[in-house]
Length: 226
Ligand code: IPE
Ligand code: MG
Image 1 (cartoon, rainbow, N blue to C red):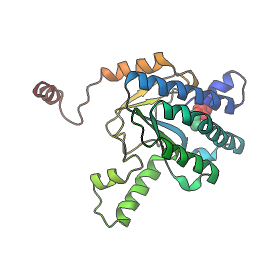
Image 2: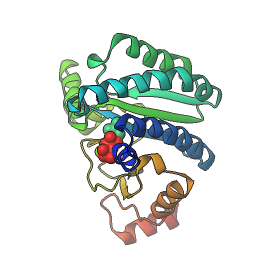
Image 3: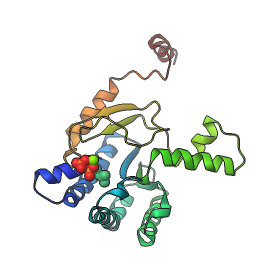
Image 4: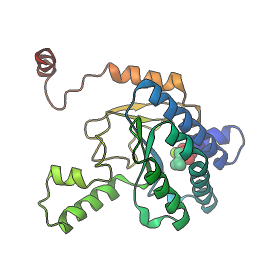
């Protein structure tokens, strides 16, 4: 969800105002995903590296998360959304962490949409914590054991990765999980991400051929056999 700061700057507003608008865009995006039949939505809300931003922006983001949880969890729960936080919980303020875990417990039984919120998350952190857990459990290190220990083990790997804000990079998002994800980059700033933008990304995705290392002919044969 990139581009909040630039959205605000263009309007001569403080960066935090862009993040606030970013929460609105996320609320809209969740509703749209449900309408479109998307089963899992994973968003990158705060990275392990975002702590390095100016202190007032970091505290603004933390306050925004706390406020968003207070306001949004009940309506999301009523809409059938299960919320999960993905990331390193050790660096997070105790009262914020309590509301995050409260939201998870309250919404755990919902099945309409799984909303994974990556918060204090880094793809490299995830690989390392997963490897450590496999080792600590005395298991052999394999793709299967590592996948099962990743912070997103409760969800399938993403089919489509959308990055807004114009940059063409992954920036330490789901490095392991995105091995075969289709990548889609939009110049749209996150607060402006709307139905037209989502539908453009979904239409683009629908036109991709996913081969997972196989040839085009094999994929076509597999489809006609099925
Ligand atoms: C992304 O928007 C949101 C978070 C990192 C929380 P940015 O804050 O990176 O916005 P730009 O890239 O400065 O426009
Ligand atoms: Mg940015």
